[in-house]
Length: 108
Image 1: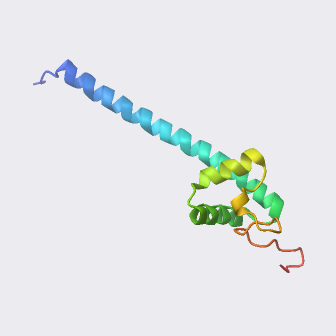
Image 2: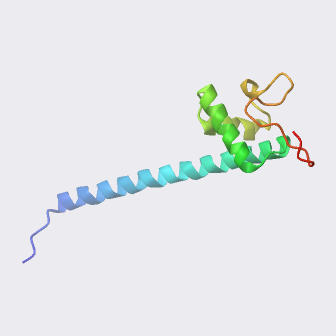
Image 3: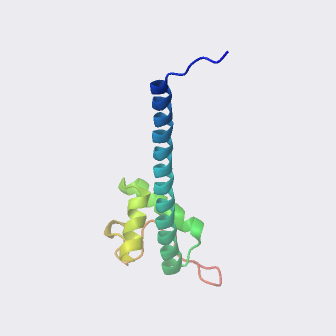
């Protein structure tokens, strides 16, 4: 015994599912874009300061936390300008949030 499904109710259910799927797709797209730009900023920090990718990500996180700016905003600024944001620079042009590079002989 099949109960008749009200077409309007079924339509509303399907529309709700589609809207939810569209939101999830948009969230995933944003996450991929953010991850890409964060990776670019990491690469710039790795190249400029002779640190590894984990140290670069930790430094971006610290900078984000200490400046109360989203990590992706700081990463975007670094990726677009290829420069460190002013608030991250030390007077000696290094950055306060990055560990000092380690020389090949292991000294700081």
